[in-house]
Image (cartoon, rainbow, N blue to C red; front, side, top):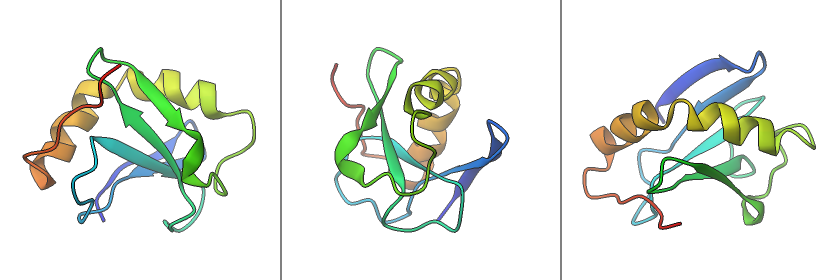
Length: 95
């Protein structure tokens, strides 16, 4: 499970699983040890990032979704390139 950003926004960890299957490019965000309850954020083909409300979101503070989206969007290219190192056939989600 590659961790790409520690201390993100002062309190979060950004990671993805090395066995993501055929999902489009996305990252998980948590304040604690990575788990299946982590919030998921999709990376879109227009350079934006979107929170996935179906992801569980048990590990980020309520109301932080929009701020996290904006900060992740600033790192979109970096996160996309890192994701492709583990999942070379992954595609960005269409907006």
